[in-house]
Image (cartoon, rainbow, N blue to C red; front, side, top):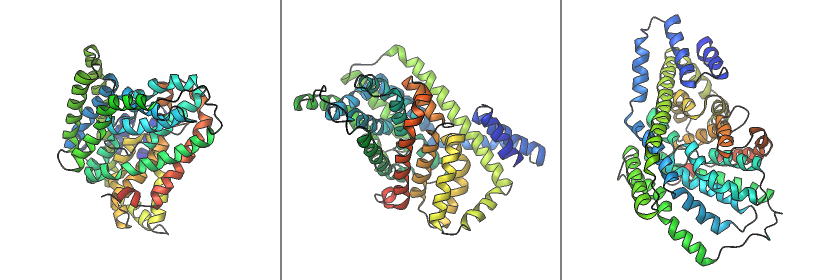
Length: 419
């Protein structure tokens, strides 16, 4: 309790980077309470960072930056806007749909939001949308799209728990749709009286033109998913296919490829990937320490002994991962508790892919929920809006996401129906 809760918790709330907080907690535990050589921790960290599948992390981060630079994201958003721009709350629906499509390509939440927000926000503000409501919806769509392949969280779960990446990629599509529908229902309710008399409806030829322009960009998510699900390429290999596709489309079709931005993009990719892998390494070491301390056995006994069986287990998991997502961020929470909880889920009869979707969505809600959720502040920074402006409107969107999560949790078919 002193090291894994006290030290780690103090570091998180003191603003120490999470990787260092985890590292200090496990180092202190090993050095001061056990006779285990501290060098073992280095081996465990190295093992956590050395999964072959984690090679795809920097590649997908780079791909997210690439689709923004080549104009692929802008083309997709323009097509959706031509379809729905004249409807009440139409651009809000476009924001939900664009985040769904872009998340499928980049896998990095900050890259997703940075690709969509600058394209849509100016037009939405011109139509009278409040900045606080815009960042609230942007943050909510960030949580909604956590399960869309090839999300880095899906890849991390597969690497630390042994669940099939192809199964996770297949199972992640429909839960995202369910949450998108609950968000759209709230958007409809909030904007049902919006005055659209000044907005011109796009003609069929304009819609057709934007669709043709967007087609190469729209095809990329389906190329990636098809290659993984059909076994043509692994999750690691398909990221390279995506980058080659993105470069070719940017050079030959959109003719937008800024060679001067290539080096800064590579630096940003290296920095973000290094941070993610260091977090995975120290969280793996801490998860091993929790196992050595006997905590995992106590947790397994407590969770399997819950009254109500699998329903209680899922309910407790939703509550726990919502809190963990807001305090620890996403990937550390998964690496730390995934290896401990997935065997318990199997023991109480919960399908591992269904369980993965439930905890990812719960963690996403926590990650984008103020006042602790880091994702919410990232959305505010990208939208250049004061965080105080979005706090009131975001609670309605979080409630809509929670309703969608409960639907996904009650009906396992949504996650495993296509496996």
